[in-house]
Image (tube, rainbow, N blue to C red):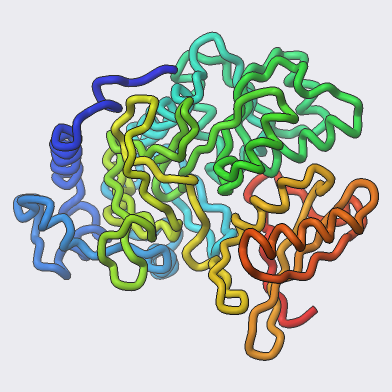
Length: 427
């Protein structure tokens, strides 16, 4: 286990002093240079960094929502006004995946890109990845930031970073074997898909020598049943990670695997009730990044629902810990016959059944009510598996859902973020 002990084990008051010092340096570079941030400060009567005298002033800053960023970029194409420097200072452009709306474009200076790599250093070190490792990235290196920063983080850490772009799944498996990969970074869905391809081709995945897999893009690796399937297939430990194109790589899992740690050396985290805006132990995660001066975000509504863990972590880190990782999107919560259900809870049940290769959640209206149907790709005899899934959902979640077997390979596979929730007018 690798820790940046001076930072990752700070006492709460020392950590707050560290964050305040970083915040002060950042705001001096932002206001008035950054039009987007300066405009938001003016709305609450703050004219400049000298008016930010303490945490009460910080909490006066209005929350930033993604729709505001989208509107800003639409009004000031192509990059919007959340820029602290002239365009000539920026060296990289990426954009969000667009899974939850219009994609956002995001620029980084060289300094900000190095900050990204440092943040990924926390992620990889926590997964016991370091110098001497060979880290494979089965990722198409396009505009989506995805694992671009992870690749840079591995290189900066002294590991051998291996790009897996321009290859299909079989070619990627062959490259891992030929190059002696010891770690893999991908979405949990794609890790399971690679396992499926390996099984079809008679490849013993657990014998490749991969000892750690790091997963982001979906809340899968934080779901015990999903993690178990990945670890069994790969013969490796699977670690959860969380990040956002517009925010940075903020969350990582340690060897204790008891939830996501928020990297509070580089981010300020808050959890609020999404309706009242008051602090809460379970609610929406609000983040401020402290090292991305070129295009920063202060008090950003991530849209992710989380639960704060209050007990100390066995790893010794004092950073905020999120029990179960990202529980789901705040706006993805389903109300099925009066019961609140997150798609991740359904996935946690479905993935317990090894015979289910892939699945899709369909949500449709029947009268005034939302109904859920699970489409299941099942290996072997489907009837008993489908019935067992339905019963497990009833027992664990207290709802009845329809489950339907579908032909093998009929549901989509994803290299990037999986879209397993589909809303239909009817079925």
